[in-house]
Length: 183
Image (cartoon, rainbow, N blue to C red):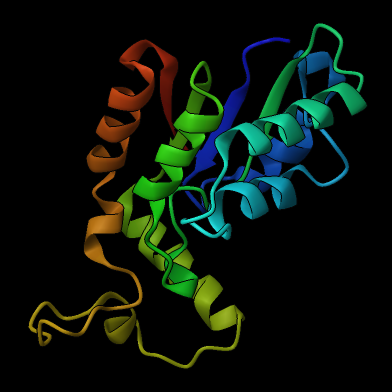
């Protein structure tokens, strides 16, 4: 089986286009394994019980999905843009998810897509409003003088990409982590 490519996000960086136009196109040399690869990733790596997480069991499931997809020589591409976290639901568990990915796919190559931070914040706020929220932009990003126990919906440190990039590079090796800007 070929070394997998794991696209971990960020959200709002063109992930749907990557999934539909690149990863799902047989001419790309990649294959999205299984009928619901994003659901498999979320169930096994994100919403799993962290105390009962079983890397070998998760890997067995992912390997079955690759076999079911008749991947042949194509590279399995696992893609879920919220693996780095999802501020829109206040989920900031990217480091724990990275640890699970490394336990399941230690040989993986990682793709991280980034976007200019102001554009990212505005895009995420638009999505937040589209989902029915009525917070002001100021409340969404915070004013910087909040009480210590308050965190804005979009924490500023989520946009400090170097933290996640460095962590992935330490887990998988610098040569196995590709960072691409959306712009």
